[in-house]
Length: 431
Ligand code: AMP
Ligand code: GLY
Image (tube, rainbow, N blue to C red):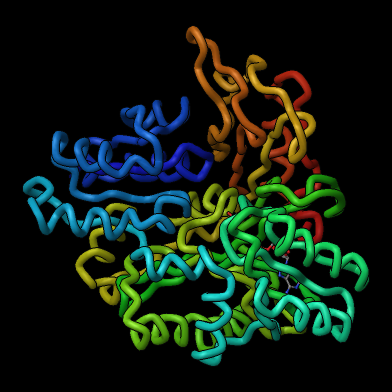
């Protein structure tokens, strides 16, 4: 099978690395990819939202499966675009389909208000909330003043991971509310605001692959979102991750399955939401009880960098089973070892940072059970340069989280670019 993978980050390098290990993957194309994915297949200079160019590539290269990495094309309707294109004129002779939900279903990530209503309708445990916009703004101000602290405000739409603000007092919450609804702080994304109860607990990410009726649960992971050691400082896209998560034991995961995953899959069916792909459930462990913080319609980054290396199953086989409604025939086969990934970022990230510094040391890195995944890198005149906030992720597998973390740290210390920064304590609470 020929496969087209969409995206350009560390998540996509990890997926490309895994896809080409399969005897079922003949040719792999990545749109647009990065220098890491270029080592696995052919990068094509097509943007993630350029559906017409992607369709043309699928026709020219007889692609069987399109695998969508990031949320944006899904929320914009890439699934529906390809379904319509294929029904007009079949896409190649081997076309199997696209991994990723329909536009309507991707609203589980694209609209927090939609996701909250879905959870409420299907009895899925989540924080209590109310939704406000310009039409009930005054009610919102009154509501906020009556809520216990802290208060969580969420821009309804996609806001590049920045749309959630946790307010420690009412004055701050009211100011933030005004900024979002009246001052367009997040543009259109923030014109509707979800005001939510604060959940106290430890977070984890659970990944479910569904064909619309059957599902399998991938290994869980924990993402370290804060920039500083000890979980301090600003929120980022993710500075590292571990898998498995020690507190997610069999009892906890049974609760996740029964109280969250099954009602979610049944909810999709009841609401006739067309879903063939990954559901990333952001959970809070509140004293042993899982509560949903958010749904995403894709895999996480950097969670993918620890989850996928622990999967022994053939990834194209899983995708084929998803697209043919046969996930019930699949048994997950997971590496019992622990995985830790550490992300090296540009100095200044998640604020302003500079790009274009040479990245040194990657070619020499050859450590058993350690894998380097490119995120924000680019090749300029044959030289590897930084090209983003998150630059490279280093994943190691070990018998304990402590061992894997130490090895990833040792490896990332061999990498250098100007102003490089990484956390040295990923997995600290489990070591
Ligand atoms: P999101 O953009 O939905 O991923 O939210 C970003 C982060 O905000 C989450 O990863 C949590 O750390 C935090 N968060 C979101 N909702 C809540 C909540 N209700 N209670 C506590 N923390 C939250
Ligand atoms: N690591 C969080 C995310 O991918 O949204």
